[in-house]
Image (cartoon, rainbow, N blue to C red; front, top):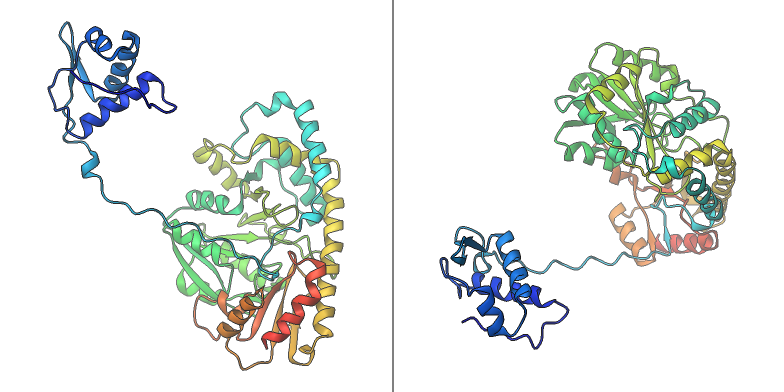
Length: 464
């Protein structure tokens, strides 16, 4: 008769402990296939526990397939020799502990939002209002493109701020642009040839690579992506940021924009993905009109995000599809659920509708303007001032800093790390070795605390 001790069962119930004991004996080969288990009554009397405990343990073993029953005869050990047992499991080493994130005194690569600039109290107030007033709507499944009030609010904002006339139905809301890129690949086709800018934001090409689509890196000149190279690789889709290229800061002029639209209109399969990631933060003059606003052939897919304007941790982005692609999306991919929760969608809707977003943008633009001016002033008054050249400082949240030095970029980046600074060089953003810009650094100042700015530049000077 099987015997088990119940003196130390931990947090398990009696039946759970007995179930585990019998299961372990089966896995270890102590109980072999075909062996008959004791009857419930005799087993309960032997172990001095209730019959219900035995019944529950047997029922769990039966449900998982470790035993089987024969009516009026009893329970028997099942043959699990073809299944994985403890002895046949491969040896797996413990996973490496995650590397602790390095803390920098000043991170010139980060685009994170400074905590002091986010309207926490207002956001919390809007969330409470949404829960109180929109509780019924919160419990309804969102359409695949997002709730209509949010898309209507985004369309109104784009009309006022960007001069773009779009229907709310054309807007697809998603949790981050990375997710939307994946949807676009499914919509446009895995067989298409995609092209990205070189240099460029490396995550974009990584996303295309992870989706196993053919992707080419197209060099740029002073006016943007080179069209002749697009024609050479026979690209179908190009992914560009014409209003403020990352990382060079180049603004594509109107002549090149019409060339790009002409290239796209030469084939039904060609499209342009316009990434307008930081259009709100232009410090000189009016915002650059979007490529989508001059597209009359339905060739531009517009992408934007609230991660730059609100916070990098608010994963709400959207894309605007041409009308014919919008119809195709809902016909073939309308079964997808929107990946942004209703709570966030309705809160952002109120934030836009009540004018809070426009006021927030104005505050952030002033804040980042001061950040940029403080950084430029610190550089101007530093020992490096005679050896640096600054470019593209009037748009977006970064500029280029050229330093007249003989040190290779790799050495400078290592020295910066020792000094508690995190830098990125322009040469790091090139995919091809096409004379990358040595000694030019991408200076993103959005996450630098104003009180740290002077000390950060003093440390930068020590590097050189």
